[in-house]
Length: 285
Image (cartoon, rainbow, N blue to C red; front, side, top):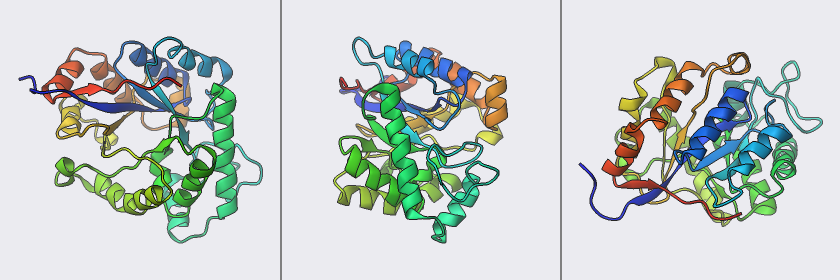
């Protein structure tokens, strides 16, 4: 059944552009088909080179097809892009779990975080010739104490027109949230309050978190994220093609291909229509 009334425009954002060639290719293909309208770029990843950046940017050469954001990256197996970042583990960032523990116990150095996030922002500008449309974080690192202060400071001072990703659910999703999503809700409270105090815009609702290790049927799972999604809400996704580089860098592999297959199918636009949703049109850069 098609939902009556004017469709609500939402964002469907593919994370991790730059992680691996197969991820990049899948994201570009979906943007070209009108199946994604946002992607966030990892400037600290090995495959955000000039060619891959230009191929993504070219998709917006006519009418804009996708918002392009900065995916702040502060966890292994990736390396800092600034000099002197600490702590390191064999030249790499600590794991996301360790970064979380260090942040919770306030053992990170604020000035090093600000320099690293600022350097990643400058690398984004170098790659695309402009500031990002939005800023978020790999593995939701932007929500952690200390790290959120650094991310929001850099955005407020250097890119205040960018909106930032908050990861709190809309009202329709709060009672349905599992353990991981509930943790995001708790971490998100301080992030959202601070962002608003600084005058930064945020998305009104967030969905898309799930246990990918369980390999769920994505075609059955995804419509749950759509239910009750308000105008301007954001759904995170991770489509990609598996290649050796992805297998080397990330445990999230085969499920990326399942996500791609769903977004590339006829089921996806039908689900949007059934929930009274459409993909928002990005503004011109």
